[in-house]
Image 1: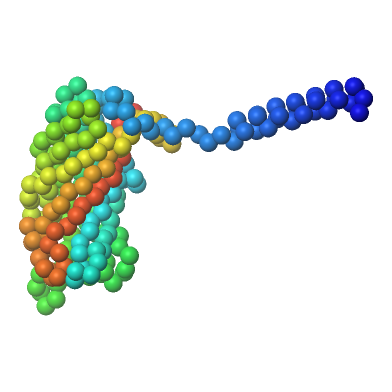
Image 2 (image 1 turned 90 degrees about the vertical axis):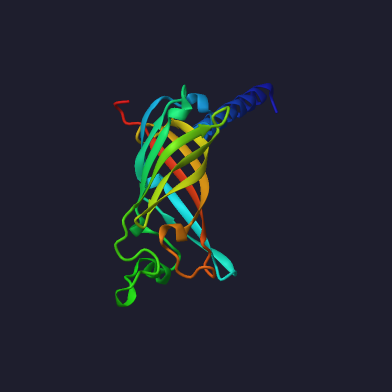
Length: 221
């Protein structure tokens, strides 16, 4: 191979590497906008994103296994004050009628009317949405977790419940451009406390709750 040919080959290889580098940069995945950094949270009022906020419930069936469902389309507001976390609060509404379960038979059982004018086994065909309103919020040092105590109204009955929440991210929503915060958490309630005692104890009285919620700050904020 002549010197000229070598030079041409090296030049072609260099151009090829440059093209691959450029292509790789173009194909690089976008950065995730949410960061798990409580210091990035700003004070103000946030509104629940119903499409990305949900509550999962789980009960044990006959001692064999657990089954679970999801309440979606959660709506509500969240007040955050990083400088004074104890002043933060949450007020959310959970539409029981839109419950999602794996079996249509189970969904019908949860929402069907009572037999012979009696009490429905569970919620009945037109259940009022549940609502949780916080009364106290105790945020851990560092701002990553919180213990929340509030009133849960379910099936027409109000009881005080305790929830544990974990901060999962904040940042600008790339679709709406709204400042967004996310949380996950859990709690346990007794359904008999809310007048839903059908099948106890073969269907567990304890109901495990898990939630995942995103809240967006309106543009005016």
